[in-house]
Length: 416
Image (cartoon, rainbow, N blue to C red):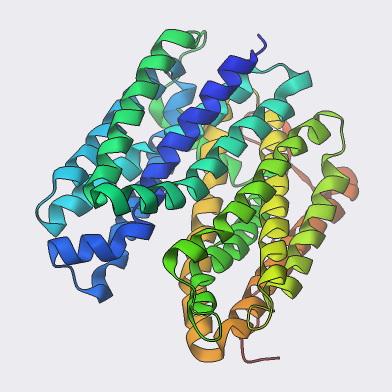
């Protein structure tokens, strides 16, 4: 069954709305802290609560997509995510806000259920194009949430951000229920068997290689977006929050340009395109490292980095869903565990690097993560070229690649 343009756009909008629940708090943390009397040192827990819920959902909820009707599952998860952000919107205590954000994060993994369902419905000839469109929706949600939340909060306060999200998620749930096809399961399996299948993926070379690439890829991405505001707000620029937010538009333009990556994958060009994108990712840090004297170079670096990240991300998902068309939810959920860990690693490491060596240290760190992604990709290609000697048999009986061990610890920011 193919997908119409309207359905692809609905999938993309669903992803954008769901992922926004995890990132909407970032531009309004100061307002939340002032309203609920949360100390500055503890504000990070608001974002962390959503990320922890998301990580739990990747392992526990996304595999359900290989068991039940995904249309019904997406609808239910959107409604429950809406309930979470509604709780956050009316919270009068910090613990209640954390509970609401954590609940919303848990069910925001509807993003991965949606990506997997879109890949399953697409024909092999247009799977890449479909994944490119849906992934563009994810990027719009991540970057657009920051811009929209800041603007809405300036007009109506931080609670309006969560109320608007709750309304959007409920509207999307209604549209999904009405416009997407049902997804009956011909071969029902047990939840325990699906979780065991998820564990088995970590013994497959293709999965581990693409997962390691994603881990370092999004560590580099997290290094940029969790640390860029620091040099821009510092001398000589002293930019305000709204001005810093404009760099998100450059990132959005780059990421949306990468939607074409799916078409390249459909044409069998995923290998060379991924290699080129990883080289671009590494090179982008040469421009990003010039934040002390050129905002134009920073803008160009942001555009290049986001383009490269999304090209590789789409290629990874295309390869994995093509290899496992019978369990797209499980393989996408497992892959996104690497994504989540990488994002958290980059976010945590960049502030430490900045404190010890300034933005130069953060830039070296981001470039080191990008270099590790290149090495993981090259190691995977080298093993694949080695032929049958390097292959192991997966639990399902098909030949699959064995795990690739890549040791790539980034240099200390002070090492150069």
